[in-house]
Length: 335
Image (cartoon, rainbow, N blue to C red; front, side, top):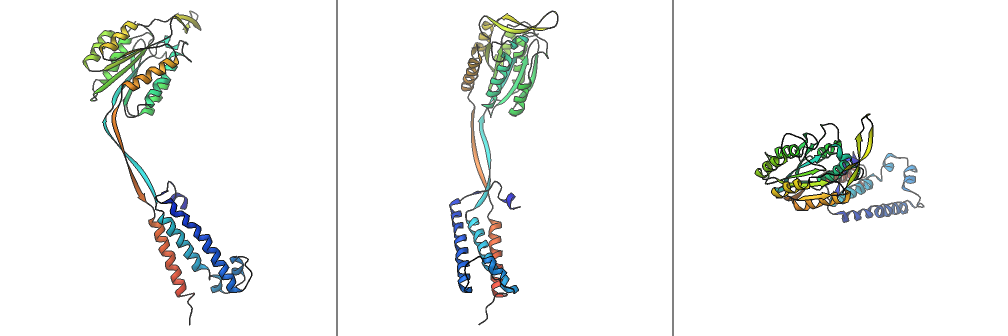
């Protein structure tokens, strides 16, 4: 019970606790005076208890013990033990963001460590950690698009969804238009002034029912800014492909990024195009986007305190009361 009382306790005036050093000094003085009065050699107060046989003699030190305990309680109470909780109030407006991630088979190319998809997932999760007050969602696409996580402020759930992403569970291909259109649809009903899509792909549009330029026009009409990222090194990259016998083999595949399309989408939506050729450059791109899209939110923290000295004050009063009662009854000295 005592342990639970002092759990998460802090003191407003911790320097007052130095007064507790008076307790052993007073105890030493009391023992010394008692032994002088008994005319005996100072051994211990316990021995004095054992050398007496009467009930009154055995309890003679109890008032002093009560007084010392009361003193301890008073000193700790004067240090003002208290607990606190912080109330955070956010004022302003955040940014609603959708991360639109290519999960096609070519994203398993190993020109990034360990591959493009895993590198993209890691920097996306780090980006989420750096935007604590924004609503963020995740859309994935290959030959078709899919909302992996709607925009949310529950970033732990979002990061779990990011790490669970893997290729192969939706039709393969690169439907950039479908991915962009689905991302726009996630933001269409948002009341936030700042709406952003971060579209990352390593290929050229070759599937889906929506043309990328049509999706771009929808984004423009909705006032959504699109940052596009072309991921992949120059030339060829080692990529796992399925052979005719069903085995997965490593093959050198040409890197084909439609930079003209990605630049057009970014420019016409007031965004920006980036090219990532390695893990470090991809990390730096997300950092730059983080700087470009500043959240205009002011968080004020109000700290509320709960005083915990009241039980100690009550204990001190009761101990002093018991000491006075003992002195006026059991230990009363008659003239």
